[in-house]
Image (cartoon, rainbow, N blue to C red):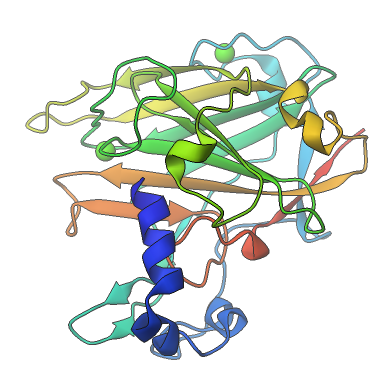
Length: 275
Ligand SMILES: [Ca+2]
Ligand SMILES: [Ca+2]
């Protein structure tokens, strides 16, 4: 819910809207201080990521050790989007995330596959390995999928360190809250493994790893499985709660978002489905 609340208060509070009246696009180019914005992640010569075909089976066990993953383009260099500094009524500059994340996407005839390796010294989850627990409180790995800018539909998938999952289908951004869209069931399958201990902030964790498969049937409202050469957009984003972070929580995303709201799909990078 917190990302939704964040999106709503940023999108609706008049004072903040006035503050953000500089065009959203310009915030993608410069930070609040005027610093030049350069995205640290690579999207290739075509300006898009490539989603390679999985050439061999993937077992969803939270271990990214299948040969197929080697062919996947790495999605990394996530950034912390500008956020409101209320004391000064301004926005912070975008900055490289302190919490390193490496994500990958693959596809085959049946599924969209996603994996992520998340460096995290303090792994935290308030929910068990269950499907669609209430939002909030957990370290979260998120994948947003937006097949077309021409149709308002988009999807969101969560995996938390226990292997708990959530999925959302949004018929339109802003047309209802979390509880309206979470009852949707994509058929996603996911697993997580942890190098460290969940919910012990006094020891030093290493990382957690997510592996996920979403059947193309999940996207049936957009025709299901894409064709080779089709271009969709997506966002890899993350909540990291940690006693080792100055603010206690770091939002990060693999896109030049103009502010800390992960539903701003106008800024998502593209991905091309490879033959
Ligand atoms: Ca695996
Ligand atoms: Ca954490």
